Image (cartoon, rainbow, N blue to C red):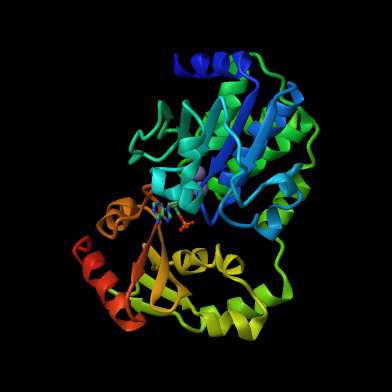
Length: 318
Ligand code: AMP
Ligand code: MN
Ligand code: MN
């Protein structure tokens, strides 16, 4: 059992690093911090990394301010890579591979390339948080309130608040167990799902006005560019969940959100409701993800990029 083996590695070593994917979401940060909290509670020495800043809404998580954006000049007995379908998702901190002889990859993307020395990939898990919960339980590690906060954040982030089709009865049982540690889950839910800054609300109104519908209103596209962000005093991460508004339209099966990240460079998010496997579409553009949520980056001018995406998407339309 790989989780038992990973448990032994934790018990037998003292010096760890944890890293997750760039442009981190609640699962990347939540699962990393859950593992971090558990390891330091067990007296281990741990560095936690991400290429990018922690999104504002996740800064309430314990030790989120310990996440470093630059690698230290150090070696580790073991490095955990979390929520990364492939090595490139680590971004410009990929040199961490040269700082250890033991990489452990823990993930839930079906397309995971098994890039590590030890790979534990469970594509039935809602989130990496769910896997970390199992890792701790199977190996008899205590789940403190701090660790539970991080795990709960991870799980509800990737399941849209325990609502998406990746939610199983196991996911709900785990959430229940985490709530029993006494965490203030209503507060966490409010922070994650019912809080907006003034800038975000202004940005949302601009983003919604970019809505375009195709294929009998079953495909919705919205976008955001640098100018819109500037006008609202918002940053890129402020738009991270706006793709959901496109998907939520009653007639829509596929919501597409195109975000300008640089001149002629865009990050695209795809969300589907019931039918379209968006991972397959994302993979056509060298991206990845899950059946109902996937993404990729693409270069070119905006109109060409949009046309290109619609052309590929059309092949999946009956
Ligand atoms: P996002 O639209 O960024 O919220 O991402 C949705 C899902 O797709 C997440 O599970 C991501 O891990 C995955 N994903 C997003 N962008 C990429 C990419 N460039 N390459 C691989 N997977 C991605
Ligand atoms: Mn993620
Ligand atoms: Mn995830």
